[in-house]
Image (cartoon, rainbow, N blue to C red):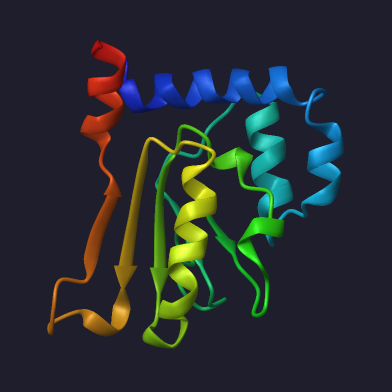
Amino acid sequence: MTDPTKEIARAATQAILETKTTVHSERNSKRLPPYGKQFMSIRESGKVPSKTVMVSFDWDLAQAYPRIIIPAGANPAEIEFKFLAGLPVQIIYRNKDAHRVDALVQEIMRVNPCLLATFALDLVDTAPALTLIKPYHTVEQAEAA
């Protein structure tokens, strides 16, 4: 039995390759975030990360995971995220960056990850720290329809 998440990610990889030439001008207007070039190479070779991709504003977070970093002052609308299409993604952040999360969520949702969650480190032990923006089951329901 194949992992449905991996199959969705593979289909997204194919879509990335098929649209690579048609969005060339748009792609030039957006820049890849730190580690984004490595992800783009992995996806263009037809592979996917084996773990959830972490997105963070801090270099010291999620070091044990495949990750990208959103630099201070970066506008998410100017960053290329299409290599996240079909992948499980988690945004991990500290309270000081909470005001940046919504814009980042909106841009990542444009590329259709199979899962998107946010995790607020400062809320651990005080309030719900994990928020599911797009759970896996929405992908499964869309495919069944």
